[in-house]
Amino acid sequence: QVQLVQSGAEVKKPGASVKVSCKASGYTFTSYGISWVRQAPGQGLEWMGWISAYNGNTNYAQKLQGRVTMTTDTSTSTAYMELRSLRSDDTAVYYCARARTTGNWFDPWGQGTLVTVSS
Amino acid sequence: DIQMTQSPSSLSASVGDRVTITCRASQSISSYLNWYQQKPGKAPKLLIYAASSLQSGVPSRFSGSGSGTDFTLTISSLQPEDFATYYCQQSYSTPCTFGQGTRLEIK
Image 1 (cartoon, rainbow over the protein chains, first blue to last red):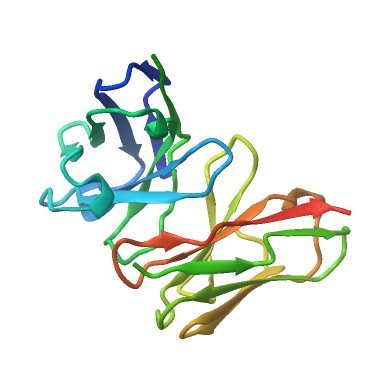
Image 2: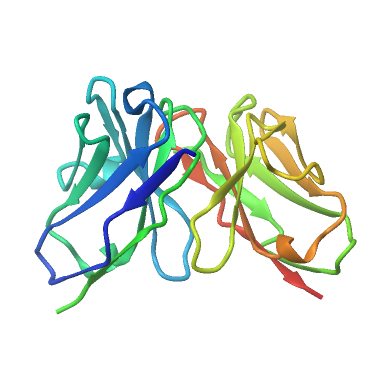
């Protein structure tokens, strides 16, 4: 079955970076893209960006431009999201989700990775 | 950015009730509207895509309708496992945006 499995929880200090992984299985990785969505505690869903696993093209949310980098490793069917210069308001659960294009729905989702930013 | 507004923000209902959740876009998004269900501590799950297409494996009591700016998610007969938070999402343009969520609670 199609599945996305994410890396484990992280605790980081303000100003640090975090890199979350998302390993795909059950489908042809390069036929889809991966979107990243985050959810602050008790809050709604915020789209962060999308990357094509076919050619590496990216589309980032403007508010995160310059702090976020999304990459893929087709040899291991894994997507990565790195967020730099972490602030306390970056504390959230980070999800990856399969999406064929930026104008597409998200299915399935990874289980989520809690990133806590605290001094 | 396109703003998505859901109503109501919360809703109390009983098992067997028919429930409708509304999502309004700040501009026309054609049929680029998707619905998700999220239970506490879990990832969202796709229910409806392209406004009215039922995702494989989702019970037929869920249905979606609408186009342009106004959309609805209907649950025809609530089951105990349906109590959750529901989000709409527009995929018409980037950044794709979500509604604020509708929390469906047991009456």
